[in-house]
Length: 177
Image (cartoon, rainbow, N blue to C red; front, side, top):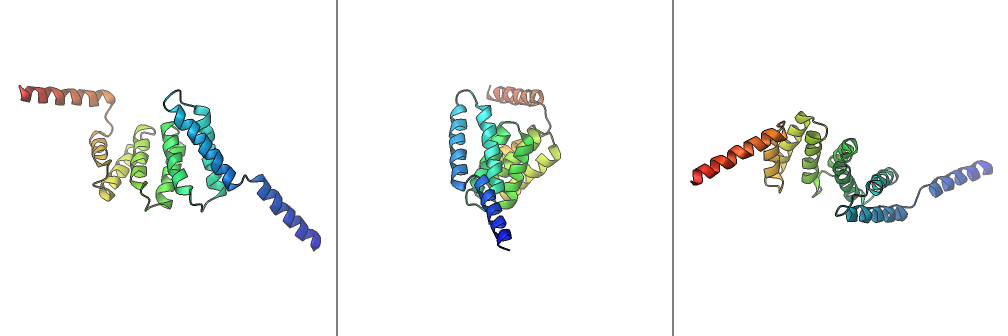
């Protein structure tokens, strides 16, 4: 019996010694985040950004009820989206929206998720549903005008948008004269 208890205690110690501590993971995430943020103004550091996404994923796996999970998950979604890693962005934003329905960042998360569906995976039906959700839940939100614009122009090519803008500008110029 003593051997089993000792073996069990050894396994638990081994498990916890193989998992980086919460503090060391947070420190690593913050250091990588600073590096990535600094690279946005110069030459984007893809390697550090990829390491940061991996660090976020490891943190979520190790600390599923942690107080920093909300902030980190939202940031992970934005980073993945900016790197055109749509699979990861969708996963992070969808989890965020489910786990943190009352978050102050939820409106932006819904909008950014719609944007990923529209512009990265071209699932216009999902994008439309999410833009509509944004407008229903946050009609006075800071991104409401952009959501309306996106819905109005959903599925149009950049060339079609440019043509419409040119027509609108020409019509406004004619009205002024």
